[in-house]
Amino acid sequence: MIQNGFICNWMEVQTDGQGRGLYYKYSAYRAPAVIFISGLGDGCDSWSGVQENIAQHASTLAYDRAGTGTSPGVPGPRSCQDLVEELYRLLALLDIKAPYILVGHSFGGLVARLFACCYPERTAGIVLIDAAGEYKELTYERVLPPQHIAANRAYLLNPSLNRERIDKMQSYKQISAARGSMPSQVPLSVITRGLADEDGSDWPAHAILEIEQKSQAEFLELSAASRQLIASGSGHYIHHDQPGLVIEEIMGMIQAHSNTLNQE
Image (tube, rainbow, N blue to C red):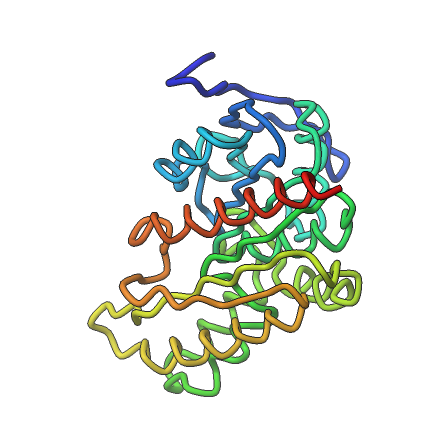
């Protein structure tokens, strides 16, 4: 099905011993392909606007993981490694050629990082958008009021409490174990929100924001070609609040990749 120049369809993907249909939105143009990886529970429509812009300059793919958007859910827990293999197989089935610029929001940043560790030769760049760090729930406990600690810990330990049934502890262990395999020269852009996500409750939004900004600054150690930007006018969904900033960073990586090829 063609919608506004994008191929929107379903693909049967075999992963963790099961076959499942994944909905995807793909545009073919030229390398490098930009792969959009949504946050936990979000579908490919989270990238509307940004993907349409980038599709004018490079091939793009956004997709609904199992349990998000219109893709059916899964019966049991999965890990970040399962999501990486799912994405790898989807790319192969669609014959989307490497290299890829991986754009990951929130939990999608973990998927992007682990993909880069598993397939460094296929990774041309990474853009992390207010991305989650390993064991972030435990870091929150430094500032959480006592009444929030039990629920926060349960969300970390119980996969049934998140829509995608992700085993967060297993996923964090996988990311930590693979950290040394991250390609040390890959272009890495870390875009961090500048606004606290306040909801009027007793959740310590400003203290959490400070923790997030510091922890995301530590991502800079993953690559010698890294930089961090603070999206001063954005909450957690920077690609919604300041899409131009995200587009600019992705376009910078596309151009840098083209310049590198021209010099070879």
